[in-house]
Length: 177
Image (cartoon, rainbow, N blue to C red; front, side, top):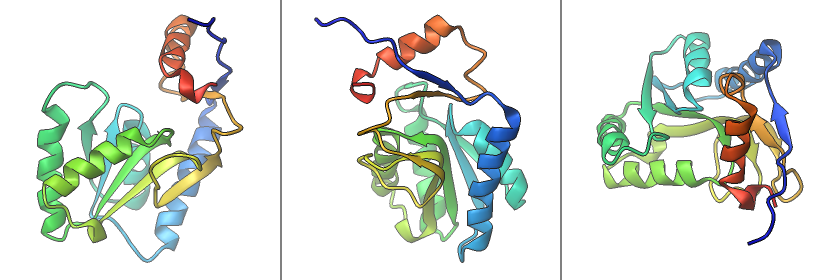
């Protein structure tokens, strides 16, 4: 096995910078012709931006914890929100980054299984990877993983040790290569 390359950690730790990105995202939603009935923060990374967007839009927030990987936990909640969508409720899912697209594709598949109406759902992220396998509807900033190998460390992650952040980054080497 080859030697691991030390990841280039990009700390997004300044509150003002993060808040500016969230305001860009909220501004795009307000400027559009679609307003959600609920914001759904995707855990862990989408919870903080979801709360901010929820407050800025004045709509309630729900949460789905996909990151814990507890069998059935997120799936049960996704089935519930899929039913809400089928009833016509407009749902805006928010995550911190659309990197590989795996999280968004997983959520879309579970929503489809639950009878979701795709016309009533949107996905928004703070940072969107243009090379991702999943497309999102709204974003504040774009990167392209073909060229940009930085590992983004969001404010809520910055309290972790450098070692644990590096370990997490190295757990997905295809994003860094």
